[in-house]
Image (cartoon, rainbow, N blue to C red; front, side, top):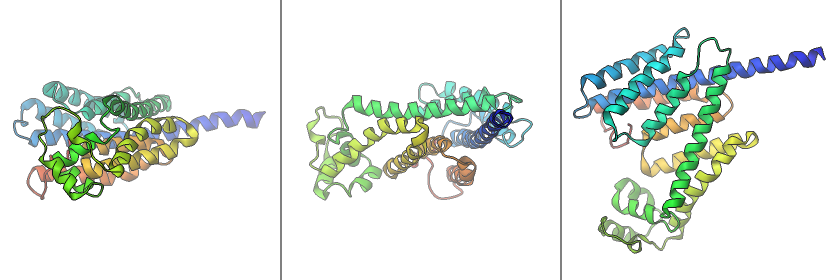
Length: 296
């Protein structure tokens, strides 16, 4: 009995320590991400306003504080205040993942110093639920829109966006892709964007089915790793065409919270490199444009 009685507190301590590490790693990523995005906003035309510059400085201070153990609980609150100010300034033109960023920051801001891992465990659970709900919601949207069943949306994007066209050229005949590119984007009716390509239809339906299925795998402990790996694979597959790196970088790091081990910490150097490239490209130091990659 003594052994059994002592095992449970030990297991709880291990779980609390693991939660603290996971939250610390994700906090460092998210705050660096928020700071870099804040400065990207400043570099865009009309972005160098006192409010946005002040918010970027505050976000940078919070990101730096996240790497100091004595101030890490305050770090997320500083960055949350900065991002809320940015969202208010840009409302209603903020991207959807800006609000996902705010929700994640709010989860981290509620973590108190000295909570013995209890707050971190709650924050970790909340972030996982947010990830599953966002993924499910995106699939539900596609289901309700009804433009994925026969591939109409992907056909439209293949004909109207060069990034999608390069990818879906592998699934569509050349003459079909040329027909889609020549269509008037503002005409009504579903017919012109119907395509005779079983592969495109399969790929189109696989997206919304995966987005509705993977959340169930994420929330069941036994299939959590499979769901996380499937989610990462789905994100990478979508980004081959969409190139929405701002959202992908955030969401992949959320999915990493479902995997055993400190994957957020392992991926932090790659994330920092990508964000640094975006900032340097915006300043004209290196080639490319962060707007082309939707690194916002």
